[in-house]
Image 1 (tube, helix red, strand yellow):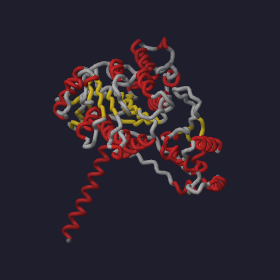
Image 2 (cartoon, rainbow, N blue to C red):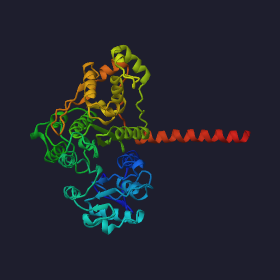
Image 3 (tube, helix red, strand yellow):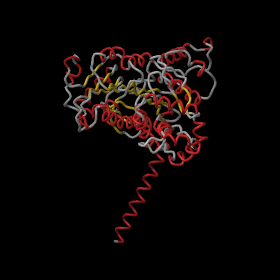
Image 4 (cartoon, rainbow, N blue to C red):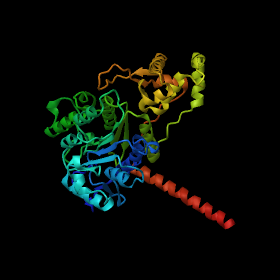
Length: 457
């Protein structure tokens, strides 16, 4: 949970502003947690028997008081507990691990659990891990100590949420990822990572913004601390030459997220940053990291619906007609069980379902189209030879020589007439109010029409 400098509480809920920030972020997470668990637990066909875990590494109190609307809503930890206790399905094998270092927040968290989910035995949840039968774990400790303790828990498929003040150190990302993923883009582990993007350039309270130069002699002592914190965010110094300059704040915010995405791509196929605009020119990102295509697409769609971003839905038939004219030879190779060429099926899947158009021959959804790995590799090579794909320049964490590709949108657009999805844009408080006003007017018109129809009858 993102903390202000001075913590304030409304009863047990932590006080935060931002209907289009914290509230919207919690809504997105509240949609994603049950969706993710429904898949990774094995679903109804397996009676949700697979072991799963949600690990909140900055849990706060489980409730958030939105000052803009004087409304108390569930925080991300609250949504995890709601799923565990009141989801209405078999959550016996779901573990919820809540880590909160701040003692005040931790005490309020226990109060919220007592009030909302009284069936959870708090003493047991706080006690020794080996004797905990509740499968809810409460840890009032530092991130490093928590990660050590969590290593002793048999987690299964796990979603980790890093929700610190501004950012998490890259060493913590590496720590968890290296323990969880010992093979190339192993599924079963996903991250949500919070980054308060604009703070790096606007500053906040006692946190000064980054300097505008790489020349250390021109940094104020307080700015040096900010630079060192950014070094920890990226886990290297390479970012400095791209960000410590006089470019506009908007350009530098974009660059920071792009550089950070590349760092996360070492461990994850797909990295989806969701932007939020809590007020004025503040911007933060909630970043989903996953090796599973379906969850990433669902999260993008939920966010797009909530913020007014259009869903990406290019015209399949028109694009395929152009593909046939460009590559008639692919039609001669059709197998009896396929109505369209393998090259097209894989290309369209990458265009419409893969975040950033990223792919490799081990992607699960590509394997569902063609189960022969060599045929998939040949197809990706063909797509690269025709200019639809190009090699990614990001190394994987396992140093394996597995080719990774990304779409070449110039060729995709020129050959097929398909443009890339628009960049996701946050909804501002003013836009949200206007949207709600329009929705209320449309609802009022609908009610008036219904009343008029009833009178006529």
